[in-house]
Length: 387
Image 1 (tube, rainbow, N blue to C red):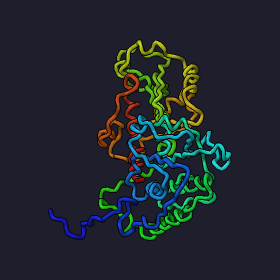
Image 2: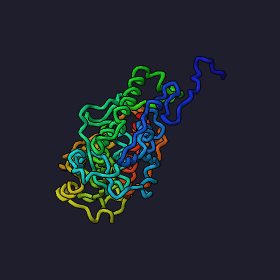
Image 3: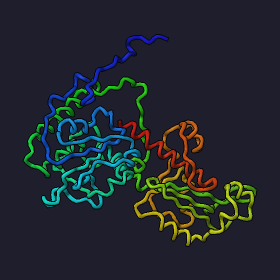
Image 4: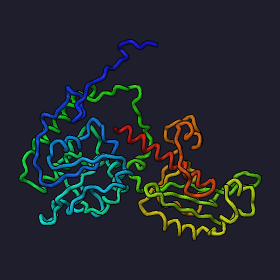
């Protein structure tokens, strides 16, 4: 079949410094800045070819800067080029306000993590070398002008704005910062005024649409997510009991893969049929505990700020039935991906999502691994939709 000309979107030549269409290139407006503090930008690989990635602008402007980008697992295995006095710009617990640091104690090298807030947290969590650095934060006087992307908080700013803000503190006499911000503002203004021309895709039919009801915690707070699954006993002849309680409970912390598993009383060891269904043996229930002991062990595993994630509401009701549901919780079944599929197995098959080998045994371990794989899929399409 031959396509008519009206369906063909011609190739657009790009500048491979700023990666903008050549008619919107702003490289000539970027100043050359002789900065004293070495700026090391560690970039998440998904940001590499983002059309509005400000790290490329920073690298072009700052003469004393380095940009590193690679897969996170490979970055974790590399020896990053840190200097003797190095700190990372990363807000949160344990970070010090950069302007409050005495001049004698200020870093000579500043690491900037480039990407979305989710990307930055991933880099920090998975690269051990970053975790050894002193952490600093900023208090921007004005909100970010990065109107192309939605920042997670009012105090969040782009990589370029954060770098300028930090260098103004560390070396206030260095020239060129205002000019760099003016170039950045001009780029944003041009994009806001001409969004279709400056940022259109050559594959409009393939653009990803993010499901509207993916729980935001899965994207913004992966460190707080604990994925859970529970098995319950059956009633007579395979009919489920009306007031079910769990006989086997498993969980996995999403960010660290830390796991929890606990058989519960009453022990189903006398029912060979149920054991076959659970894909467990009577020996797996030697350590079964009563509900009070389970609650104690469960609350030693979960943190007060954790969020439980289960595919079905029925899983959470099992925990509620024994008084163990004291955390915020979300369910995944209603997320509007493949609404024609009822079970999680069907959704994974339809979406061609591959699961990793389960970390825990039995049917519960496999169900848990499937739920984790589904969450990771939801997170991946969310990140892709941002880019």
